[in-house]
Length: 227
Image (cartoon, rainbow, N blue to C red; front, top):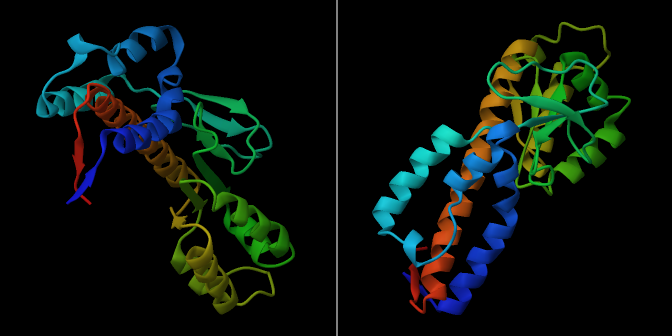
């Protein structure tokens, strides 16, 4: 058990709120204002409830109101389609997919099998630079439209050996970013949609919890945080 002063706890909470606040603009469309109000009601004494009630109601509101918009980089050649979430083109610093309002928090890079082989060969240095940039994102992944079995079989015309490709991927996962082998183009898009939604949901919950902590500490009550 680590005891934090109210000032320290409030500072940590405010940093998390800054990290997450833009999500209130990511619920999208005509419902943005109403959904944001439901997700993030005004601060004040009237908004304070018991911790258990607050957590339960916040979780319910997050599930019903959250509708993040997926950003597809304008340079993407074969974009995924999404059945449940809205999407729009945009310019991303890194990766091919992100969430509106969280472009510097989450990034997904799409790779077909031919793309991945090129990254292991002639474009290796450029790809490693991209992985280094992705490493700075709290939530990131390279989503491959193939399986590990495809890499082990080595059924391609490239001179690269399966052991070379598998070794490169293992090294990059250890050093930079997770790789997800979704199987094919459509399955990769479905996985990406689920992942991006869960990131949006997680950051929203962080916002709600952090703001609740600010409410407590701003009223002069110390906070106990369990490590």
